[in-house]
Length: 259
Image 1 (tube, rainbow, N blue to C red):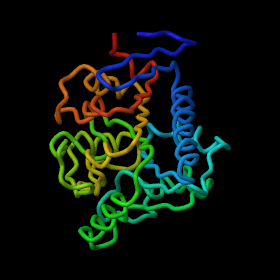
Image 2 (image 1 turned 45 degrees about the horizontal axis):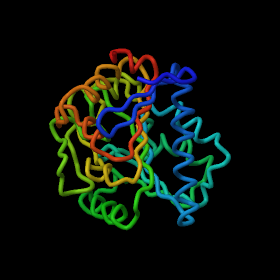
Image 3 (image 1 turned 90 degrees about the vertical axis):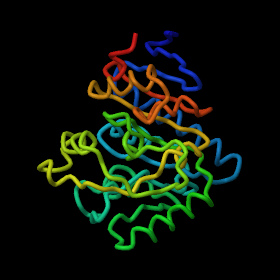
Image 4 (image 1 turned 30 degrees about the horizontal axis):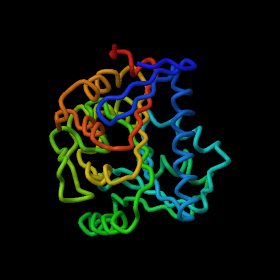
């Protein structure tokens, strides 16, 4: 493990890992990394396509990215990872609402493509979103890892490394729903939806670069399994070790179980 300027680094298979002390430093480091990847894409083709994640783990990263005035948002098209099935876009837990309020309304990207979980025709919405993903090469996907090791809403029981679809409806496992309740998005566990529309694992892995921001002690077990376990859908995030340009950003809490 390398130690530089308070940052520790390691590599597991193809996955690069950067460990910062505090979650704010993690957010700043991930934002600087993503900003440079966006700028590189814009220099090359005058546009960039990115995916943004949601959840409490992304607060510091999105705050730092929002404050980076070098990002040319007018040349960026934004996608997101997932949305609850049948949830109104104004619901406090809606991922569309989260992204609008935390970053998009302020930075005004050139285009935003949301998954409309409440559209009524879920199959048609999935097809529409798959077509968009097929016609937009994603330059950088900004994701997290769930407490059960999921990426997007690919919980262990529905994760498929060879999925034939880019977008699908999934049933959320109890641990995943508990995490959403525990983060304070819902007043009771029973209110947490049981199904969502999510990008699949192959859809995420098609991205040129993946930035994975994972702070907080409650993620330490999932981080440990991601880096030390077999590459398996038992811990879906382990598949990131096969991607040729992924960086996992940790803080001292989420890295707490690592040697």
